[in-house]
Image 1 (cartoon, rainbow, N blue to C red):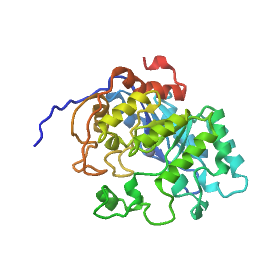
Image 2 (cartoon, helix red, strand yellow):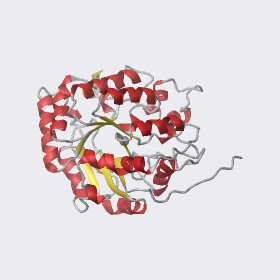
Image 3 (cartoon, rainbow, N blue to C red):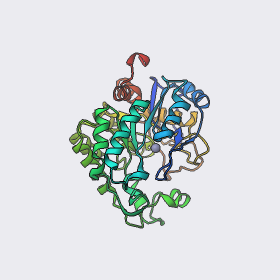
Length: 353
Ligand SMILES: [Zn+2]
C-alpha cells in the first residue's frame, strides 16, 4: 500500500470565485419558464464561508419569469455573493422570428440583472429543428449570431459547454474506461444515434468564437480536457476564449505535468469552477456541493500530493484512476481563483484583495 504525504488544504490561498455552479435548474428544452430552486442562499452560504468562496456563479438561472425568480432567491439578499447567468429560450427555436427574439431577450435579461449567458450541451446534442424532433441544430447555426453578438455588446460572458468525454461517444463495453459511469447513466452516451463526434462539436464552437471576436467565451470543462494540445491550439487562435476547470480535475490531475505547463502558459484565461449542484437533484459525487469537494480542488491546485481521489466517493466516479496535484505558484493561483473571473464579470477588485 502506497504511503505518500497528504496535505489537507482547508482554506484556499486566495478568495475564490466559483464560476460554474448550478443553484437553480431551468426548463432545458421544455416550454414554460419556471425554474427549480435547488438550495436557498443561507444553506449555500455556510459552505461558501467555510471554504472562502466569495462569489458563486449560478449558470442555470433560466430565462423570462424563471430568471427573475433565480435573481430573487439568491442575489436579492446577497448581491455581492451570487451572480446569475441567463439561458437561451430553446423551446422557441423553431419560431420564425427567433433570432431577433433571442437577441432582445439578452437585453431584457441584462436589464433584469443577469451577468452572462450559459449554453448547456443541449446545443449540438439535444436541440433539434422542431425542438425535440427533426435534425440536430448545429452549434454554429447562424440563427444564434444575434444572440452571441448581443452578449458581446452587453459585456455578458458566454459559458458554453459542448461535447463530452470521448468515452461517452464509444460503445459501453469492457474497453470503455468510463464503463461504470455509463452503466449508472446510460442516458449520457452519445454512441448510438445521429450525433456529431467530439471534434465536429469542438470545431463548430471555434467557428462561433471566430465569428464573434468581441464576445468573451468561457469553454466549460477545459473545452476538451482530454486533449490539452488541441485546447492550446484553440486558445492560441481565439483571444476571446477562456476555459473553466469544472468537473475535470480527474482529467487534469492524471496528466499533471502537461496540466502544469498549460496553467503556466494560459494563466490569464483559466477560471476556477466546480460544476457544483446542491444535494438532491442528481447523485453525482464529483458535483455535489460540499466542503469536501472544495478541499479536493484546493489540494489539486495547491499541493504536489500524489495519487489521491478526485472526488469524495468510495469508487472514483469518472473512471478508476487517481490524480496528482500541480502545486501552482501564488501568482497563478490568484489569477485562477478570482482575478480572471473578476475581470470577465467586471467585479470590483478591492472585494478580493
Ligand atoms: Zn455544469
